[in-house]
Each structure stands twice: as structure tokens, then as C-alpha cells.
Amino acid sequence: MPSVNRQTAERPLAKPPWIRVKLRSRPDPEAQRTREILRRNRLHTVCEEAACPNLGECWAKRHATVMILGDVCTRACAFCNVKTGRPNPVDPDEPRNLARAIAELGLRHVVITSVDRDDLLDGGASQFVASIAALRLASPASTIEVLTPDFRNKPGAALAVADACPDVYNHNLETVPRLYRQIRPGASYRHSLELLATVKERHPAIFTKSGIMLGLGEELTEVEQVMDDMRDAKVDFITLGQYLRPSPKHARVECYWTPDEFAALKRTAEEKDFLMVSCSPMTRSSYHADEDFERLRERRADRV
Image 1 (cartoon, one colour):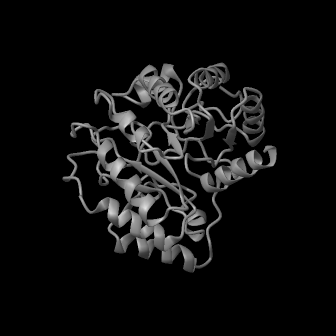
Image 2 (cartoon, rainbow, N blue to C red; image 1 turned 90 degrees about the horizontal axis):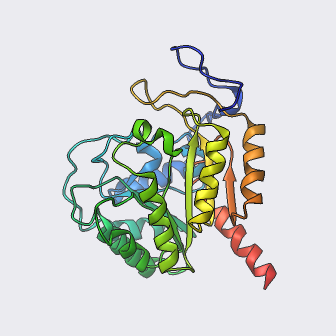
């Protein structure tokens, strides 16, 4: 763990200057338009439910990460702001509503995520499949990225989603193995790695993606080992961002990694031959995902 900005007392650390988000003096009309489209189609977003600090910036660009399968999670991870409890029944109209909203927003790259639904026999995989199919019909030019839960103990669920052929299959490892019991109870680091490797083995043309949060007490060597584990699993894209504590009941921030430290991690990841690296204090799984994917396509086109 970095030697500076480290937790040394029980009281919370003050956020450093590079973490602070600039607030707009007045509501952005495009952000308001995004909100209206999502509300009208009865859609939830991880932007809101996870209290993402980048919401204003992304929504002003009419980019939102839709969270399917409701807004109540069956797990209680120590880092996550999504509420936990007994979810409502799956909405059969959700894929159609999603497709209609994305077509109206005109997104060229769509990111779909979900809560954990351990109560469902397939963990909600069929809703991902239906959503991908609906999007292909409504917005055939859009590329699709899914950010799925681990579907633990739901045999075949992840592959069912992969067989629907999204352009990017994202599943986050979230943190280093040593911290799983504390930060991600109910999940397995090894299982998540195997999920990513299995998707890539089944569909080599699908880009796989994963990421972790920093500031939970991990050491630099542990982060580097996670990078190596991802590459062993043939993960193509990596995201690394600073963990921010949603509330006092969540896991505390043990340290703030500096912009220079993030820059060094970015160089390390690039040296390990990830196709795409997004690494900064404010990076989140879907932050600038559309721009990153477009840059990759342009780079590949230049090589042809």
C-alpha cells in the first residue's frame, strides 16, 4: 500500500484535491434529458444506485449504465451502495424498455449491468440475453458491453450471456484475493477469474474486461499479481480506480493512491500487454467505456 495518504486513525481520511468532483452551477439540460428518458422507461442505473461521482459528466453526454433486474441486490458487499434485500419479480418488459431508451439516447456503446440475483435459478442470465437481443434489433449499430455478476452456483449462466455475443464481457474482480472475505463476502476470486477465462475460451472474439478498486488496504505487489492473474485468464481490458466510501457503514478508505501512482500502474498494465487500460483516481468500470472502445477500434483499423 502507498506510504502516503494512509489511514492512521479511526477517523475517516479527508479526500485529497484530485478526488473532488467539480459541481455545475446549474443543471445540464442534456443530463436532465437523460434522466427523463430513463425515468419514462422505468429503468435503474448503477450511476445513481452506486452513487457514482462521474454521474453528472456522463449523463451530460447522454451516457448512462443501465442496471437491469431491479435495484435490490441479494448480497451485501462492503463497498457497494446498492441496497440489499428481497428483490421484486423480474420485469418482462425491461429488455424492451431498455432498447427503446438506448435508441432514444442514441448511444453508440451500451453498458448493461445488474444487481446480484442469487434468488433466480439462472442468476438473471436470461434477462441479459433478452436485453442483448432487444438492443440488437433497436440499435444494430451500437456495440454492447455487459458487466455481469459472478453467477456463482448457477451452472452455464455466464456462458449463456457470452453466447448472446456482446462485444465486451466485463466482470470485475473488485479487489485483491486477501481482502475478499472482508470486502466481497459470498464471492470467490478464483471463481471470478475462471468465469473470465471460460468466456474467452468459448468466444475468443469477445473482448473480456475486469477491474479492481484501490484504497481498501491492498499492497502494490498484490495489485501487480492481480494484473498477472487477469492476463493469465486472457483478459483484454483493465480498469483501476480509487475506492470512495459511500457511507459510514461501508468499508473505510485505507489510503488514497496519488495520480502519479495511478500513472505508474497504467504503465505497468500496458507493459503487461492489456489491449486497453483505464487507470486513474476517478476511473470506474464504465467510465469513458464508449471512448475507450472507439479508440481500440480505430487503432485496430489503422493496423489493417
